[in-house]
Amino acid sequence: MEVGKARAVVEGLREAGVNFAVGLPDSQFHEVYELIAEDPSFKYVGVGNEAEGAAVAMGAWFGGKKPVLLIATSGLLVATFSLARLHLKEVPLLVVIPYRGDLGDPRWMGIYKKLTEPMLNAMDIPYEVVKQPGEIKKTIGGCQACTERWLKPVAVLITGEALW
Amino acid sequence: MKRFECLKILASALDPSALMVANVGPISREWNALRPSDANLLQVNLGLCAAVGMGLAISLPHRQVVILDGDGNLLLNLASLADMANQELKNVVHIVLDNEAYEGGGGLRSATAGKANLALIAEGAGIKNVHVATGLDFFEKAAREALQSAGHHFVVAKVEKGSVPELPTLTLDGKEAKYRFARYIERTEGKQILKPRYTHI
Image (cartoon, rainbow over the protein chains, first blue to last red):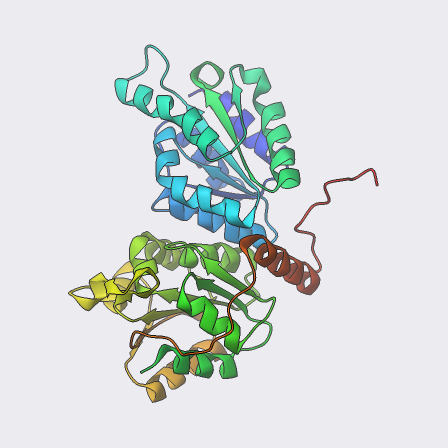
């Protein structure tokens, strides 16, 4: 992905007040992980699986942080149990997902993309799909405000057109 | 040794301001009977207890965070141990009440009833202060030392299955638990966690 667009994601998170990032490094988003890990305005915690990541983020929220969970579409499937369970406590969590898998992308990406929106809908997690790079920051800001007010996870799905 | 007896020792040794994260099942019910407090976050779901404790400990490095875990819980997310070790936490006491069973789910054996050894797994993950207690005297010694010293402490307490009769039931649901715990941290840390939903009133 273009570094300029990765910067837009990181700036969008910073401007939204996010200060705690949890992720399992993924090849589609690795520029974002690297920028966040180097940025002193974030505490970045790498985890071994995405379900654990959602729980770390919940702990950070109770600790007064504003967390984001950075995971791939495949990681969303691993995080599902943890994310669904967050609803019992109703806690906010911004989830940012690089949304590859359109026509022309590798087949395995297409399989995960097909499952993403149905999984989010099944878990009653609202989401916005970002299709243009100019929409990245504004969408992240809006979704972060929403997750704090609605006390439920909200996801930002950033497409290939927006990021690559 | 009985889990409830271990928890009694812990309740007597714990600083009232320590934050406690406990997993689903009998552990939460027993702990609530011994130390009901808004400083407890109870009924954290299977496999997520250590991770929630980690997030809390990283965010509030000046507060002691005690994690009350179970063997089945921890086995679901062993990566938590490696990730916690790499954070080099100075404020965590992680206690695993290992009854070698999924007691809340009917009592079938967990992997620690077989070949798995959580203490060795924790050491392999990079955690240095690891203890295994099979008797109450050693558990008390290990727990008190862990609670009174900085660092990341991991204590496996080998306990029998079974709870105690006539425990009060937990009447908090997840939402109320969230509000109580978050408001407690807001009060004691002087920070805002829950944002008002109506800013115009």
